[in-house]
Image 1 (cartoon, rainbow, N blue to C red):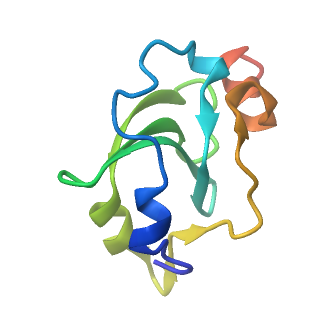
Image 2: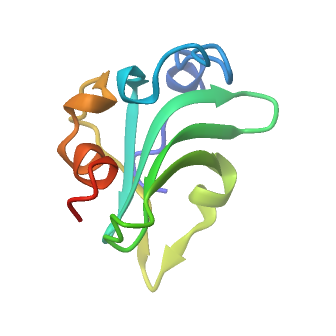
Length: 110
């Protein structure tokens, strides 16, 4: 993974299930990971299992994009030819409803 988040950065993420009572579009998105037409938006993280909870868009498929769980170590190993998953170092934490790609997918505009 390029620009892999440090343990300190991962530890600052909300713990898994800690925002369970927050409506999905109101959830804070704290990290954006990407590869080609794939985007992973991170809302929560579990240190022990290394599982994230967030919003995933695979291959620009907005129709099948969804909220769910994905694994950090699996993303770290994912490579296509010489390209790896990257972390958007310019991403500023914001609510899901403020991220155009999530809104596009949730509103069925894809």
